[in-house]
Amino acid sequence: MTAVQSEYSPFSPLGKGFLTGKIDQNTKFDSADFRNVVPRFTPEARKANQALVDLLGKIAERKKATPAQIALAWLLAQKPWIVPIPGTTKLHRLDENIGAVAVELTPDDLLEIESAISRIKLHGARYPEHLEKLTGR
Image 1: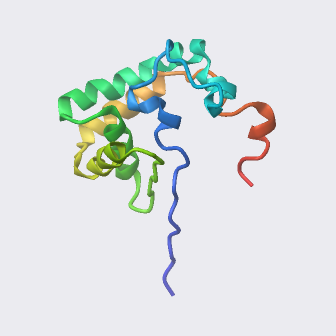
Image 2: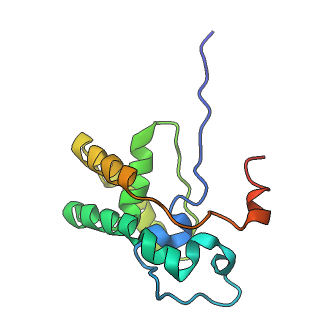
């Protein structure tokens, strides 16, 4: 009998849009936007977490890709059974996301990302406490 590996689909693999490089500490969200209540999306947390986006942007520039494509390519490079499914409402973002499969991250690229990530302390919780209690069920 052979073991069957389950697929793993990371939730919000682009950090609710933050890893696209299109959001910074000065971004204003619509009053109905869920990110208004997310601790990781306070202006202070966005400013502190910008180092991660800057890293993705640097690699994206070198690879002639976008930060979003680098984030998705990194996930795809982890394990064959990890399948990121980013959400979008815009066709051009869908095309951008699909382009991540063509981004080849070398072992040196992956090492660079892992090394940099290990030195970046993320600020702000993923969710407000009352919503965090509902995750992982």
